[in-house]
Amino acid sequence: SYVLAQPPSVSVAPGKTARITCGGNNIGSKSVHWYQQKPGQAPVLVIYYDSDRPSGIPERFSGSNSGNTATLTISRVEAGDEADYYCQVWDSSSDHVVFGGGTKLTVL
Amino acid sequence: QVQLVESGGGLVKPGGSLRLSCAASGFTFSDYYMSWIRQAPGKGLEWVSYISSSGSSIYYADSVKGRFTISRDNAKNSLYLQMNSLRVEDTAVYYCARVAAEYSSDYWGQGTLVTVSS
Image 1 (spheres, rainbow over the protein chains, first blue to last red):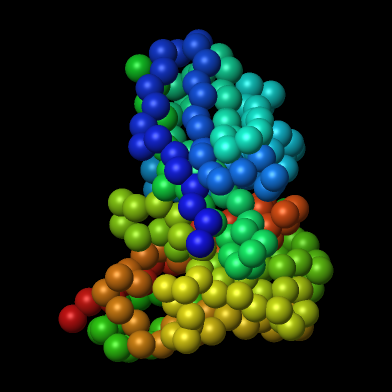
Image 2: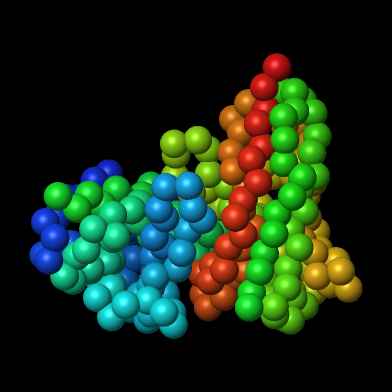
């Protein structure tokens, strides 16, 4: 089965740029989606189709995907961005949805 | 606006059964695939199952295949998850979600907690 690997944690100072990676075999050939989840809340889609933003998501959130790594980039990080972030793909070989293990973003 | 409201969670003994429901509103339910996704306490997200808009295509995670059954009633704008032979490791918050582009989930319910314990 397809596996997505994320770092357990990333720390960043306010105003700086956070990059959260999602590794998978030839993930560049798949569409990657990213979710933000704050404590006690349901996840929120922040990036879909590798780099598209749903309405209402700030432009500070961006995504890229190439080779074996997809990346969620959060520019000018704010305290309110502190959350868990999950990447997700659809594995066509198994018709299964696959989530990464999640990354806890800490704003210092 | 899109709303998804889950219900039916609770405490059940190992080996027991439970049926979750998800009431949808604010969009044409019959046009969308729908998913169940769960999250064990303190853990990450785990996809459980999805069902096509007509109900003709259904897929399950290996961890629940043969024990869980997803279904939908488009006339009632409702999604269901019948969970049988429940195990302690099925303890989680269960979310229903609307499936969008490339199997992303663009709207989620607030979740319902299922606790499997003796």
